[in-house]
Length: 557
Ligand code: TXA
Ligand code: MG
Image (cartoon, rainbow, N blue to C red; front, side, top):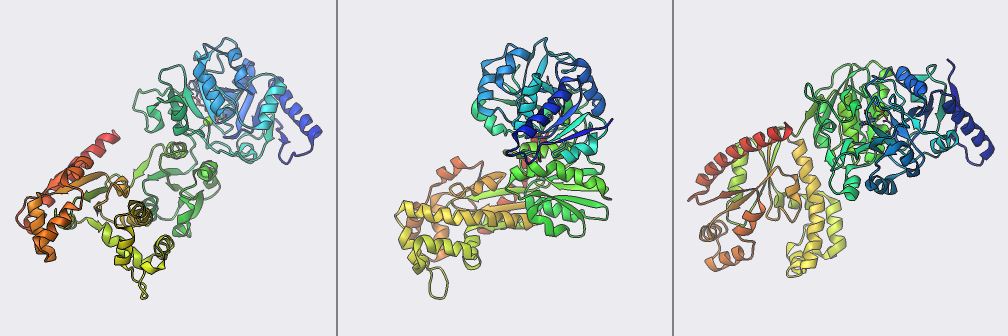
C-alpha cells in the first residue's frame, strides 16, 4: 500500500491549500482508511471510531493485542453525550479545566461506539487533543477518531511524522505531518467510573494539576510497579512491555549526581547512555542521548521517546538511563523509562541513609557526629560548611554583600561576623533575609557533598535543621537532648566561660521540648563523658539504621 504524506507544517496564510489537505485527510477517515494524525502528546493512528471494520485494521497495522482498547478523539466536550452515557458533572469540570489537552477520561460507553473500539469493555476512553490540525480533521470527518499511539505495538511512541513513517510506511493510507509533538508523552488517563477517580496512566497532565481540581484521586498500582502474577491493571495497555527499544534498558533513580555516578561505574563497550544535559561530558566515547536539563521536565518529556528510539540505528546492546523524580511531568517520564526497562530499576538512594541532627548547644551533637564517623559515615556540620562556603563561593559573598553592604566583609576579604551580627541581631526580618541567602547556597552544597560521598550513611548537623529546609534532605531527624544542668556544665568546660554566661547561652536557644516535638527520634545525652556518649550514640545509630532500612524495604513492597 502506498502511504500518502500530507504535510501541514508551515501552513500560515495558505488557507485554501490547508483546507484541501484537511479535506483529503478527513476523506481517508470517512472512507474507512487508516490515518496517522498529530496531537500535542504523541502521534495517533486513527480511524473512524464508528466503523468497526476500520477499527479492526488499526489492531492489525500496529500488531496490537485484541484485548487492548482504543481511546476516541473528539473536538469538544459537547460530543460526550453522543458517545457516553451517565456522564458525571465531574467530566465537564475536568473538560473545562484541561480540554483540549493531554487528559483522557474513562466514561461509560454508549452503544454508538462499537465493541471493537473498547475491546468489549463497557467503558470508553475519550480525549480532546490540543492540535488544530487534528481538531479540524475530526470536524470535517464529522466522526470521532479512534486512535492509539502510532507506533508499532511495544515500540516507543512517535513524536514526529518521521517516527511514524519508520513504523507505519506502507501499512496505512496516510500520515499527516503536523510538526513535532509539543508535550511528548501520552495523555494522562483518569477513570471517572469509580469513586474517587483513579489515575490509570500518568501522562502529559501532571497528577498535581488533577489533585488541584479533583481533591481526592487514587493512583493505579500499575503506574509505579510491575504487576504481580495474575494481577490485571485497570488500563489493559499497562500490562504489556512497552516503549522498548531494541537494546535492554536499565533505569537509575535518585539524586541526579549519584545516578550519573552509578552509570559511570557501569560503562563498558556496547553501552549507550540517556542522561541529563549537565552530565554529558562524563560519557564521552559512548553513544549518548540527552534527556534535557535536570530541572526542565517539559523538555525531558519531549525527548524521552526520541532518546529511546535513537539507539535502534546504532550498535548499542545495553542502555543506561538517568530518571527524573516523580514530581510534575516526572511521574510520566519516569513511568515511560521504567516500562521501557521492564521495571529494571536501580534506586541509588535505596541503601543511602541521611540523618538530620539538631539540638541546643552543649547537648552533644559534636559527639554524635563523631559516632556517625565511627560508623564509616559522612558527618557534615552545616555551620562549618557555611563558613567554608563564605571563603569559596563568590555567589554567596555577593548575595550577602548585596543585601547587607560590603562593610560586612573585612578588607582582607573575611566575613566580619560582628558587623553582620549587629545588623541582624534583634531584627527578625533581617535575620530571615540572611538565613534565606545562606540556606539557598547551603542546601545544594550539602547535596553535592552527599552525592560525592561513596559510603552509605550521612549525617547533617544543624541547629536550624527545620527552618533551613535541610530536614527535607533527610530520611530521619534526630533531636540530641540533654538536661539543662549538664549542658551548662559542658559549655563552661568546653568554652572556658562562667556559669552565668553559660546559662544565658543555653536559654537564648530553643529548648529540648521544641526539638523533641519536631524530630522523628530523640537521642538523649545523660552520659558523664563525651566518650561515653559517643559510644551510646553509636549504638543508637546502629539500631536506627536497621529500622530505617526495614521501613524503606516495607515502603518498596
Ligand atoms: O496521548 C494519548 O493518549 C495518545 C494520543 C494519540 O491521543 N493515545 C494513546 O493511545 O496513548 P494508546 O492506545 O497508546 O494508549 C491508551 C491506553 C491503553 O493503555 C489502553 O489500555 C487504555 O488507554 N484504555 C483505553 N480504553 C480504556 C478503557 N475503557 N478503560 C481502561 N483503559 C483504557
Ligand atoms: Mg501506546
